[in-house]
Image (cartoon, rainbow, N blue to C red; front, side, top):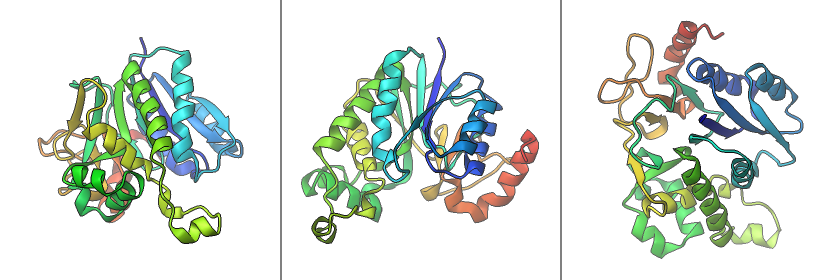
Length: 270
């Protein structure tokens, strides 16, 4: 039974998606499924080159964050896979096959290096979706990154179903000026992170595992305390082992620029 990577790239820069794909295909030859916009012709051609399946959707890039869960769930209902990686595509590259790791859980979440209460934006999202009481219960937890989640086919379907239910039940509460003017509150973008943290930290799915940013297989770079590369220009964890997935590298670009360039050269990526 095959593994699957699911991701969205609506309205993204082709160069970012290309790095994601080239690095992933260097280690992984199984199925990749993308959501793209109907205007994303260059991305569409790229996906064909790298043997990816895709669905063209009429969703603005600012709205795909919340709507992707339903599209992905419908896709998973039609097929059967061993394990599924749900991830972002704009700010991720791969240093190995993401499925070649001894994951402990049927669903696996990857933590950042900061508590929710110490991050203004995650605190804001949690308060504006679930309210103060839930915030106080979860505020001391380490942020679980919503851009990289890996689990069995059935567990990922449960996660997607829960995200659909939670985002509908606990909607982001827009600020008054946006309610009065019927405008979208731009600070809501990414607020599904709060729903993901609610599901992860309450372990609402059986056999949940959470991995530290410091020593796990996934690096969420923005809050990563120690940035260290090996002689092959790979980002390594505290055990000296290269991370399988590097996420948010663009947020620490001054530290990553040269190493990413050399890593690309090693892989034969222009």
